[in-house]
Length: 286
Picture 1 (cartoon, rainbow, N blue to C red):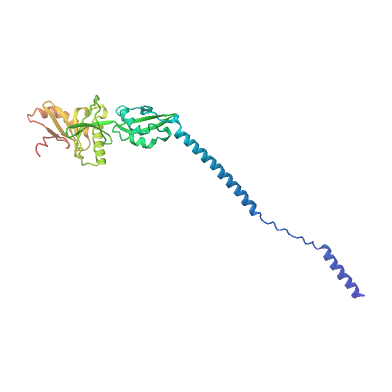
Picture 2: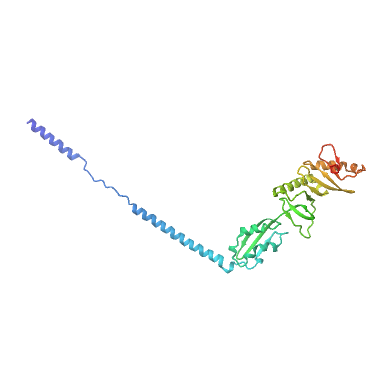
């Protein structure tokens, strides 16, 4: 009896386990649809390619119209307007555009023409603009002369950068003549000597004195001794200024000028480089 009861409990226990056990379910594994995603990307790539192709074709059509249409053709050099030019003649400016006559205004290489214009002696900087439908406009910034320049027997003008300029017919200037600019000097040395001259003039004209107008010539051949020529009653005197304190030294000369020329000595040069003393005719003693 005891064995039969035990067997019944065991069967009941096994039955309960089966009844309360979770049923097994198949887990579905989703496969990645990689081929679908690739198809989407391929579609986008095709759309972009078609769009770019249409844009490129449209761009070529626009370019062909801009460069080939009669309405954009430059008919003559008279189609080039020149603004703000005083010394660079319109003929010299338009000469840089002769090969553009008959060409579309869109085909004119503006940067090349700008460089060509800046090769004209009086032109410091140039700007070239298209004016639709078929014209061009040129703006010029011209160079500003600061002195006359003697080269041999010829007289020229020179600007602050050491660029030599022809003297315009009919123009008058009141600059001193700049000398000492040897042909063996490099462009950088030329500019340095011109800057030395400009500092000399600025110092002489400080406080409204305008002393530079009294000099007919300024010699910068020796960087350590700026010399200037001033007119006196019986001729001209060469003054040695050295470097710096130019106005102070010239005022010293002016204070003693009458005394110097009343001494009976013929004075052709004066050395003002030393504080507290004036040396007469230093050039004649060499």
